[in-house]
Image: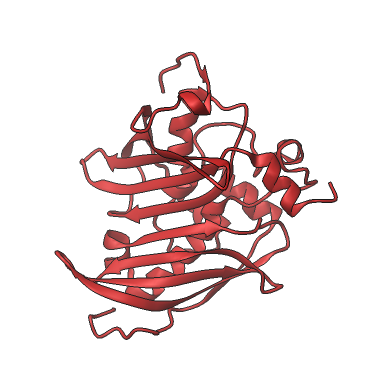
Length: 139
Length: 141
């Protein structure tokens, strides 16, 4: 588990994920509102984005980044003090392979301990940035 | 979830702090399994992410005919949800602003379980001109 001896520049474990139409659709089945959108309907995706395919929800990238963060800090820390904040830069679709990387960029004292800030990056198989942002956890 | 007539979403009339839908549901093991399989992470603990608490809260109140591009998500984790337990969700409009002449809407949802454990707070930054992003990434379409 992480401690306050975490160094600036430390790399968190990278995760690489294959995104498929099946995984996009399966993720959408978790929603409790039965509604067509650009993630589960090619028609809606075409209408809204002009694509011929569905797009992955940004929440999938949040989930991938959360896995990287959890592997670094441990679930006991990350599941109770963690956060992930990503901006989505490019669409993710069937056939893409997304790799999450991250480096500790800063830390500061807070009431509950030391907040560690990690710069997060998601890239596809072409090394294009699909999302970027930060994750935090308190150790 | 209680049925109520939907209002047409008019960006200009939305108010920061405005309450969106509140609802409850039971998280099932099947939802957790589906989520874990979809993201290929057998230890993932927050299927609530894919439930889309904030978007659901918005869509319970508004008929959003414009749609929106998810420009970003911000999630805070407090306690993993437990399958079989009831989850209570409250949504609100956290912010709205213009950036580079594009209208953004920030919706937020907070989830607690039946034991009043705070689970997760999720924000979605929606850009409310989705056709412009479509042109940017798919100019040939």
